[in-house]
Image (cartoon, rainbow, N blue to C red; front, side, top):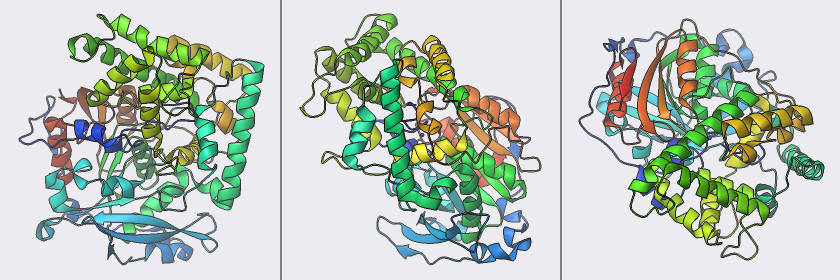
Length: 533
């Protein structure tokens, strides 16, 4: 999720299944999920109470200005039982919003009905991040990972697969075997030969996407997804959008507020991306975030039983760097003789554990094993991060959709000179991960369709308050982005969690959960400069 691997092989902010990034093993989820009760109030200014969401008056839809869109906004889908306490349906949207009478695609939705329908507030649309993550799969994994008991009682929780993801016309660029090779290729782009190899790989990937997606490839970005989200709002019968977006889902929510400020209801953006960040900005800030999260892990290691990587934080960090360097020099053997642990796979396995402190013990054992020359556990973590199954298939298209969406959302400078200059900055900001994050612009530099979004600040003038939640030690969506987004939005309100890991809501802080619930259910915003610790 947006939104921390190079663009050619990583999801931005992906990660962590509880927050909608790439799924991690079930044992990880058992460590990081948990409900809280009796939430303490965040410190900060006095809370603000808003009018009930039901008091919102009807606002015009696209059909008010152009009859061509009426058939989309007038959809009232039929929900059918699809197991696990969920109901499912599809909603039609145009492939190209500028040509609504031409090709259409079906977006997949899942709904967990309010458990107290007599006291129902409305429908809460939710997005887990990515870009590329399946909201339907997120909700199917358990509504408790998505919202609290109180929100579950009063809202129909509605998840969706954005265009090109999950079950909504998923883009498939490579076969599973070819994608294995793409993820693991150890070519060094700092050399002329290595850069040429990566460029050939990127061209092959892009060609596969174009063949598979056709016209849709140019319409997978956030600009089109925002239009879709407004149709989904209408399809669930809401005049205004009540929304919970995590990671990349915050960019989708912020851009929605910017385009449709009069249709904003109660919106929570958790683990924010900065809409004004360029592709290079994203890389540099994420590099710092990952290094900071590794440092937090390393500082805790000597005090944690089972971690024997060193007596000081510096020693622990060095052990991790040594594993990456060793994999660069020669891939480590694993339990699968056909799949050695290359440097890109080692990088993926390491960062997979940095999204939540509950997964740190997995990194302890994986690095310890790798130091002994066995990369099996890091390979398992890398595969879990990418959704690769033991039989070699992938559980979703998230990484491929991530690239297809990201290349439309931010222009890149893929000239060798610009990439070399950024590589130098990345290594300065992140001595551990900077090299692995370098030359990410190669893939989007050969993309066959141009970007559809220009990064820039979102003010959403006229929108009701938007609650932005930021975690101080978030590796994937660093806290500075939450600060920036809250400041950009004319009605933004920042809630800070002094914690570690990716996103904050439903990650163990009763204070954060209580503040978010108070806003969604009662319209009570936390006070200015509110902080949970």
